[in-house]
Length: 247
Image 1 (cartoon, rainbow, N blue to C red):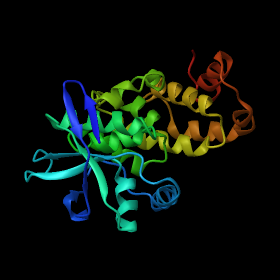
Image 2: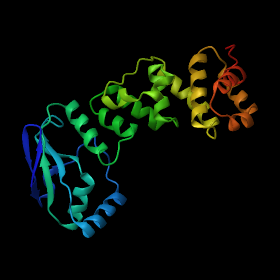
Image 3: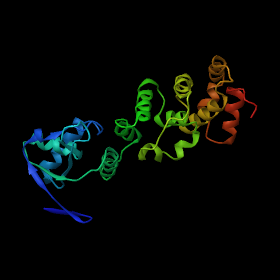
């Protein structure tokens, strides 16, 4: 089988040497349930696509062959004792590798933000910090990114996280994440859009408000908070009644 890309033919090879492939640290982990689904599919209709690999020394210094796309298929075929069909592509840098991984994976099962963060954190220190904060605080990752960049509107444009250009510009971000975690836990039952209204008000008020009093205000107005819907009036209510802001 020959597959074509721009200016180059890509030949599908086969191997039963399962040790040939190394684990790519920035790829998604193996989900055993998904592997089982792949096995069921293989038994019913056979193998209808190839695993995508690259051979490089830019990851660990030693030249190894890594699976960029199709690690669940490769695992399923190994469990079946069947040959793995694979295509090798070239990569030019770590950035090129991550971009191609994202493109290939999104053609089957789209990456969420954490998949991008897990990949980029291997070569971008700010992504590693974001990954750490997600593990430490019970706050959704897009909100952590808002705090990290001092931009509440990042929920409307997560492209920087995906394309590798995300940077932490807020020097107070870690302390703010820790503080907002208290608020986020309090408003857990609120609508997601309302939580962003809280985040917006928090970012405006941070450093000039009494945190203990804000938490007490949330308890005081909890019935209203649970019934809130997104809108300008909601934002005004949160700023005035919860954070004691004049505007």
